[in-house]
Every structure is written in structure tokens, then in C-alpha cells.
Length: 154
Image (cartoon, rainbow, N blue to C red; front, side, top):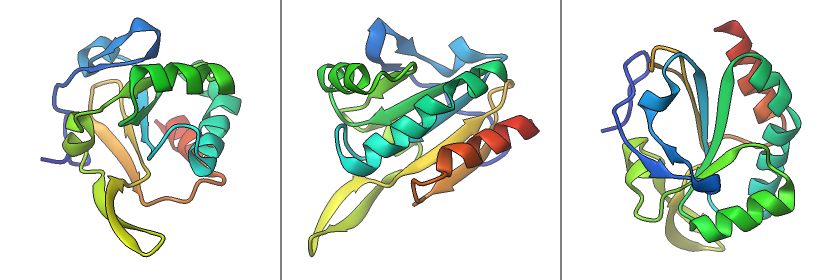
């Protein structure tokens, strides 16, 4: 079941970098951005993370927490986060529970082969825990700025 727009986010928990355990309930009263990306240390995912990093202070000033989510391990995430100086945590979803909850697993074409992977997607959850906006199959350049502009409207 995919979270529906304008409906409360279902409860879940996921481990993140920095020893954090993410649950929607822990962020009640805050705006949360969850951005799903295919793989640590790949060009598009690095650029996307850097855009969120570079705008992080603006997100924070608006009471917004940003989290990246992929199927990579905590160890991989810790290295990626450190290398890129990300000021936000990365959720590890190796069993695809969170990815499936958000419906971001898709069949994709990689060099002519069909592979199952994460569709680059972003979700904004409002302070009441309601999913207010989603972007799916998005293009990276300028996306973090677009998300920030939406957050400003909440």
C-alpha cells in the first residue's frame, strides 16, 4: 500500500546513519522530506544529495528534517555521508520495506537489461504526519530547490 496524498503516513521504522532509528511518530510537529535514491556513490545520487546538502540550512530554518533513503547498508551510507559531508541522515532499507511502503520499486532499463530498482522519488510529510506532496521518476538538477519551494508553502 502506497501512502496516499493528503492521508496520514503509515507507521514504520528504519535504521539510519548516526545510530538513529527513524519513525514517523518521532517527527510529529515537523515537516519531513524523504528522498529515495537508487545507490550510494553513483553520479545522479551524489548530485541529488549534494543539492539537499547545499540547501540544508534553509530546510532546517523551516523546521524541516531531510532524509535520504536507499537499499544500501548502514556501512555504505556512513561512508557516503562522510565523503559528501551530508548534514542529514540516510535511512538503510536493505529489505525494501520502506521502499515498498512508498511504492518506489520499479522495473528499470539498465544498459538494455530489465532490472528492479528504486525509482528516484521524494515525499513531503507535514507536521501532522500527512503526505502532502510526491515527486516520482524525477530529474535531479534543481529538484532539491523545487522541494524547498514546496516546503516554504506549508
